[in-house]
Amino acid sequence: MPNRIISTIIAGQSVVTASKETTVRAACSLMAQKKIGALLVVENNRIAGIFTERDALNKVLAGNLDPDKTSLSQVMVANPQTIRADKPLGYALQFMVDGGFRHVPVVDENGAPVGMVSARDALGQDMVQLERNQKLREHLEENIA
Image (cartoon, rainbow, N blue to C red; front, side):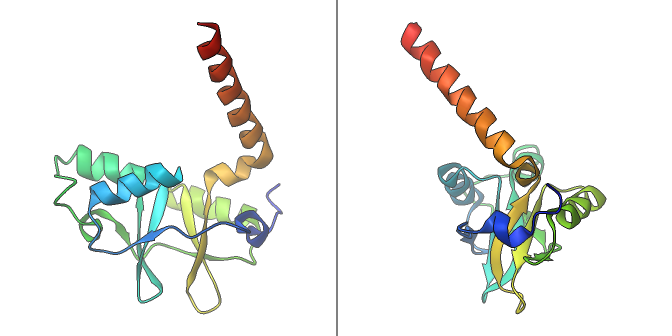
């Protein structure tokens, strides 16, 4: 599993981005719509930052900031560490452990964003199957009640 190459993990993944001026509320709505835990803040096809669920909770909500007036530039992690798509997943996971984060932006040889690898990716198909089973259980419970 840790030997899987990042390019195979992010294959077919769309890069979800926002600008520095995007409000926190708009970013959170986009993340909820796309069912993702982080998005890339991009400027001139380069990663300027990353905004995560943790940022929304710890910086915005706990910081008593107005999500309609707070821009991503105020609360994003600027200039995050990135990884190339030709690296193994284990390398990205070690990156996450060492840095204390759960998402690593993936860039091409020119530094342009091509995807995002997350701690969840380490669980691969096992996690996907677990989520499917949970949704099935919830569906069955709703129909029984």
